[in-house]
Image (cartoon, rainbow, N blue to C red):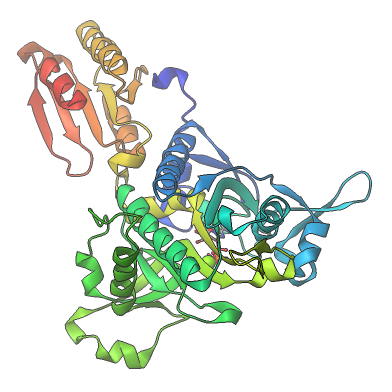
Length: 440
Ligand code: ATP
Ligand code: MG
């Protein structure tokens, strides 16, 4: 992408209407623009990050055996009357009437719709277990939308729903999603600690929130430092190994972690003092077993192996895809701007010419740009006729992992500079070696 042809409105001044660093940086670096309270347009650079995050979520769900579909954003009120939630949901639900005065709503979540879809087409135990998911925009009319995309009204969520014949099966589905979540966040380059969550009316230990630590987080958190050394990717653990998955779950739940809602002083006191970690965190995911709540109220039944009718056990598993863009920035930035983890960076490398009027610099930049593009490396070329310092400032602000800085003085010696955004290290090397490093 050539910056001169992109739509990348970078702000010089820090916006005064944003309170937290990720929101400020998302506005300054031109990732999003607010179009109405809590509703955002995703500009090209923000949209690229959103898509990278979405794709990681999708790939990890697929590996865990979940099946993707797509449900609509608009739903009928009648569907929600079947579970009794239409009246219970309250003012967070955006209610709409169509031209025939039919009551509709913009979905805040999809338990009702998935349960109805499953009910209408699945009749036998042979079709279970299943976990279905989609990645779709939600709307919740939050009282106080704030912190940009972190607490928006319209936001992108991955929500998965599991259907099992019995509780043992439902637990396995839960463990499977837990592992998928650990791997998902690990791939994004962030540490999201699973914390015991308030489990709602049916109780049990099967509800966890995944929390990214950040001083601006909305929840207060308490956890055992063992999580700092935790093996998030769990290499070697397979989804078809029920005993292994259960062991992982036991290990996670045996290690203390809680939000202010579930914090237990007695158990906390048992954690060695030197290992107690407290702070604040951002909820980026939530997994939840709720048994027969929706299957029962909505009449979902399948015929069991012995011919009797069975009401399936369900769970739901959410990830805040759009919130993650903000959460990752909260966890990864410095005074100069964003520092994208490689896996979610909008582009891997940015090319900057220090002098926009120097022919050899332009020729070198053009050559590197076209060769990297040909090699399928995501590259942003700042080909604007701007001062070098301004361009370097924008590159730091938008936070691509690598920068190639090209100037007349270096070229005379046959070198360009390769800068690592995270460490700040700069290295002089030939254009050829820079190309080799970035395509390795
Ligand atoms: P919160 O406690 O932050 O209001 P929640 O518990 O109501 O969230 P869930 O129903 O568990 O949210 O939704 C699943 C995920 O969707 C959350 O873990 C979060 O990452 C994301 N999410 C929820 N509400 C919002 C919002 N208003 N803006 C952006 N993301 C959200
Ligand atoms: Mg939640």
